Image 1 (cartoon, rainbow, N blue to C red):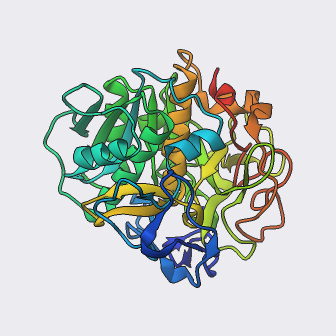
Image 2: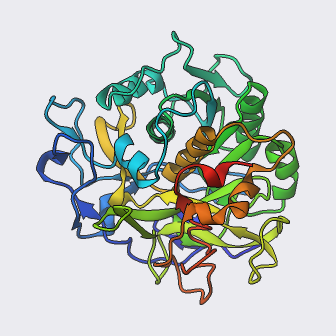
Length: 413
């Protein structure tokens, strides 16, 4: 098991350092009418980001990985000529070359702990702001369940409510035609979250996003077989927000471990550029590394790690280039969120756009068969390990995996 060290985000693998430079937004937290990126001005200190869920050091204890920008003025409502700060659906669809009309009827499940009483109403606000089709219980698009499949929801929790808002908004942004199933575990212990994963699959979801993590421990192998071995189901997991170092369940060989990038508009042919979310000094940033115990999947071919390497693919996660989210329970309305909590539901949505996984297949292997269909991220680092496990370069690297979506071809069997 890797040693647990402490960062600003709590006991985790990695070294402590100042957070990567953040971006300040225009006055009042608003930008021009089109739903585009946050302004490109660096903020002054790491105090401009707050972790929504407290880290847990106990074996089997998980915490959500959502990060909130505290330097963005929050708004409960917006005028017709203003849009939320942060990237919106059109930005993600353009940056990742995604077909907005695909995914009709596919169900993406979100697994989180505790309850967000405002999940459905907040989702309605987000989708209305961006002109997305309504997704409600009444029209069959949205469903919320407890980990037993019923409506005996767990106790509400502000931090996890913010996580839930981020998750459902990112699925909406990437796959507006998808249905959303929110399964709420009664606690943040792996056994309850794992039971919620099983419930999501039992309820028909072929795509399941998990935006939480904790340290690796001796119970992981048992959890793999009990909760994550679901052939024909694409299960995505955030790689972590504390820089170089491996977390579970991202290390499970049955899941797609999703790392994180900084995403910016530029003048290239693509119109966007990405680098590793993190700093070479370590500390905050996308998680990555070589598992201490999990076996290496047959489809993973990197030679510098004899066991499971993290991550597989990635998407935007840097709060400095963060996402617009509407959250009225934890926050006061519109804000900018980030963390690999954002990249996991983004990738789950991309899998849904690509179509149903093959029966009996391992969807985590799909990108490895189609690496050329990804945007290769070649710059940046999340630590100073001296190898590709913390530093980007051509081809596979730990912080960004094989790269970010360029359409859906890399996510098909």
